[in-house]
Image (cartoon, rainbow, N blue to C red):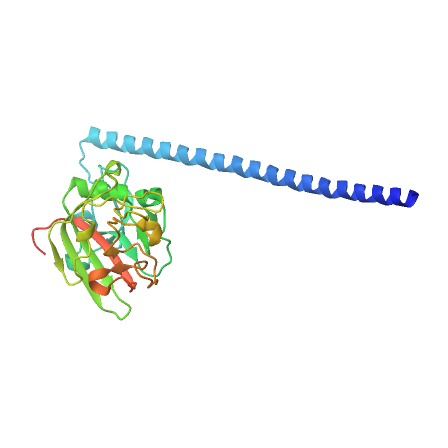
Length: 290
């Protein structure tokens, strides 16, 4: 009986010891979490402070230029303006007042079809995930030197302030390159679901795979604006687009996926079961001739 009692005490003490260790571990984890949270708050405060400093410097610069009467155009509004056209780098800085008084960086194409193009979407190697939510597509994502999407907010500001041409460049895995131009590309506001409001007239050898999307609001995996009655097209095709019910073009599709409708598709060029190797969408202020 004494042995049994001693054995029970031993088990109980061992149990207490194990639980004490777990409590200590949890305490350490919670302490680390609190520390990380504190650091995150500090970083956010610092980011806000830097933003305020930039705002202050911008205002001081504007006041200085106003007082001296100097009308200095520091940045162009697009890749088509002379101040940007003369640059030899693909990555440039523009300012779109309708979007923000602060400049932002863009990727330009000065070689294709007369140059002056601001690249708004680029697919090259599948390094970027395009199956994203509404806020990501609203604000833009990716790396300008490779795969990215400029952002619907910027697109609305640029296309609503001046008539824009849209150039779509496509290439398959065999090196066959095609293009399609639309002469009046316009995107609505977020209140209107960033709808594809206008395309204008079109020409090119890729075929018109955008017409079926005209008038459609943008759809993402967390914002279903398409015309399909039973599924969210973005979720169904692991993408995001101006889906109807569902698509003829899907340039935000999954890279290299030849499953029906899920890849980087341009139906009039390669159908729904061929994911293109390269795809690029670009805009510039409308020209009278090409």
